Image (cartoon, rainbow, N blue to C red; front, top):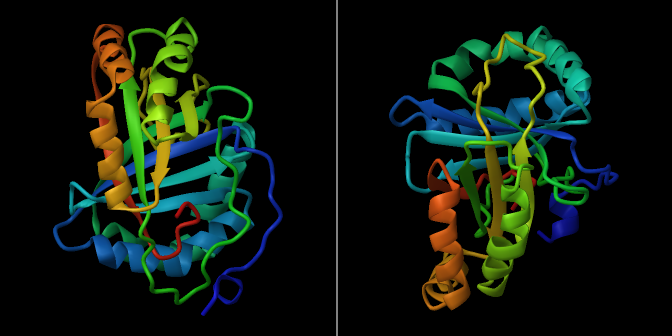
Length: 252
């Protein structure tokens, strides 16, 4: 089938002002079980109450990790939408099956766009129910851990030194996000408190494109300089998640 037959068009809203980066540790062998349940039952019902399911992924380096991104217009809308979903009939019907796959769901970073236009917008299209073909794309989420808020100098350094080197090596940013400092408006779902991060998302056509990017970085004098400065600017080494979109992920 072509793209028109396998996707449903939606209006394109503004970037989500609040984004959750959620990393779930699952029981051995249960990731595909959760993904099938999630893609079948949890995407449209969450969006129907006011949130945006931005992307769902398998972690390429950890077979027991499921990673996904969820967005909201603002923090108050987040509280309202999460209450509606988790107190609603869909979660009540499927929560036991979902929880049976899970070990830990508390690894959650609460984020916002680093600058206007640097965030994530809900996709205009997503594969319909029953889509089975897996995208070839690879998405990276690089988490930079900071001692101070990103706005206190690191963001400017990143835009001036790091971002140009990454773009030149074939990895323009899909989004650049920083810690949302507001208090968690839905305490039933914990988030990582006291974190100061900058998260850069990038998308590659496939694993070969990602490998070419890594080779280009190794050969880049600009990247070697950026990496040396990064080492001194971060509280610990950056963490890069290599993510493969699920069949119904909007980021693909």
